[in-house]
Image (cartoon, rainbow, N blue to C red):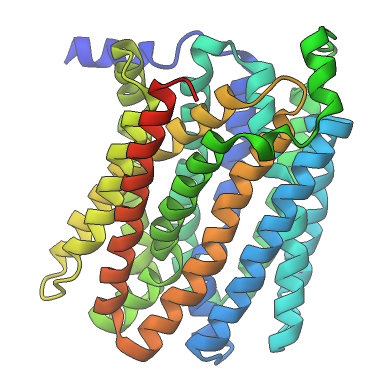
Length: 404
């Protein structure tokens, strides 16, 4: 027990104070982002939209996320990650507060589009900030700590949100979302200072800056982006269709649904950092971690093809969480390591856009399949996303081995 505790503490050592501050800010921000996991229920149950209409609103959600990711990458390369993060979080906070007053279909489509454009300019910026505030040997653990904070916040948020919805309704959640965004950015500005060190203008850097489109010519990176897309197609079923599945098939209320997220969060908070620390010492190729993650995510939906026992939901969540612990830190690591100096924002923007596009298609396709053919067919389709990601992961392994 003493050795386990020592290893757990060791996994947190050596990280910069800026990374710890970013983790604190991420915890506060994500704990406040209470309404996101319940949007599908909010649209269908509270606003009486059909699943098809809810699916279209999620299309605009994902489209805004994709545009925001692209814009965030461009702005990060031009004005720096620090300014992008401050502007993004502040406007996002105000936008979340205003979103509760929009109830029409087209109003929500364009309202969600605007909110996500602004909110997701933040993502490429925070990825690049990890490169600025952490040493190369600590980068994966730094990312894991940020993820731990985000997931701890997401564990607190949905659980408390479920209780608030049952007792007070949805309106209060939008206020909490907005205020915590503004609080998070105030803390960020106070605690974390913008790096003053400028990158060395080597000939290679100058040549890369002349070719801002170099990311689009990197075919191996496009294979990797394909993996991220199909991984996201599977993962976002957890956010969009699973809450409806919990309610309609197993008759769970919002508070009980929130408790399922606690399983996900508890595993990540307790095990991810020491798990990543252990794997980093083994020097296993990043592509192997990504391959196993895709396999686990795909198989987790094959498990819930059987819906006769509520325990299946727990097994599914555990498999999905292990896949998430492997998949997201190591896809981030691959993207950061692949990014060329001076155009990191463009590389990380494409990485963010892959998940944004997967959110668009996963939401619309998933809800449409559920509406027309039922949940079980949707789970089989989701399994194929995992299978395609596995095939692309094998291809990526081969290309990296051949130095392509």
